[in-house]
Length: 370
Ligand code: GTP
Ligand code: MG
Image 1 (cartoon, rainbow, N blue to C red):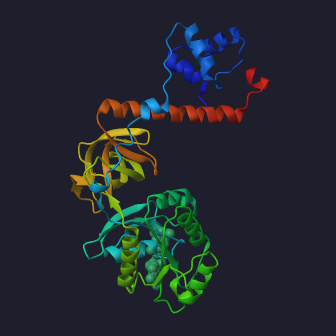
Image 2: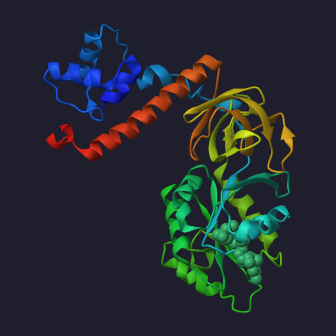
Image 3: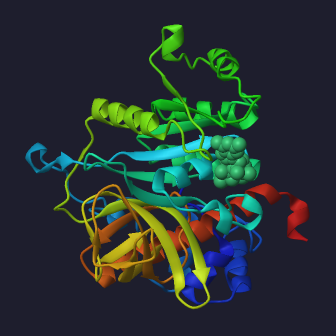
């Protein structure tokens, strides 16, 4: 498990790769620069070069990063995180528009959602909901899988004129795999061809049993465009959320998940994080996957700067030294040195893993040697 490529070992000792290859040969180990050797062999080589070895394990570096365990008394109710899923063009973004009374669709290139949008919407009764809009494009399957893992409830959008389609089925699979309850929004009810009964029977084939058929899944006919049924959908979401009895500790250091990230020409690395527990504040030192940074600014879903973001809140964060990956966990840490150490360690591990992967793919045949 603790393997290292000859090249990486050479890099860390600040010697030429060929020197390491030669030293290995003298000890009877035939390895090319791209091959992996085990930790014991590496240690011998390091000793040959008169350098000291320090083996660092995950446990040493990562210890304490995940922070404290919350006491029951510190937990407060939190807003549900709802992911909107469904087949391409079935109306996910339009439905979100209807829910937040704005117009996201019109601003999108070609009307196709290119990345995960995240919004916080007050749906009345003092209950905000964090919504995540996932791309309907098949190429974004893995992002959608990640969406489901930060989600408390999935709103499955099915167009009443089109019925259950491949990505509807995929969304059902993700929700079931994550153990997340589904609320079905049967959309486009304003269309003359709308056939909600067909949608319900088709869902049966995928073990989604709606109330009409004796099941527990709530299905609400809506029209995102005509803005009908939206109140009923909100009621269904509130009902579902109450059943889940969701809690978090707003007083602790923040913990969250990156839902999207990019390099912005003007602003540097920009990541949207969904805060899941605790409160994220400007000035916090964070580690997000293999990146770290001091939070320079927080921007809410409407583009306004904010000083802090509590549980179930999506915010953009500025100040990371690099672009994390969607699905990466974010933690607040005590000091910069610690953050930098962990980030460097994770970057090195990532690099090694890709090198080892490449080395394994090449195999270790004699032909490699000559
Ligand atoms: P992707 O993000 O590309 O997967 O699509 P989406 O599921 O977000 O669908 P989007 O909201 O972009 O809507 C696709 C098309 O369906 C647009 O032309 C919408 O105007 C239309 N549409 C959405 N909801 C309704 C509805 O309730 N009724 C009618 N008639 N059209 C709708
Ligand atoms: Mg969309």
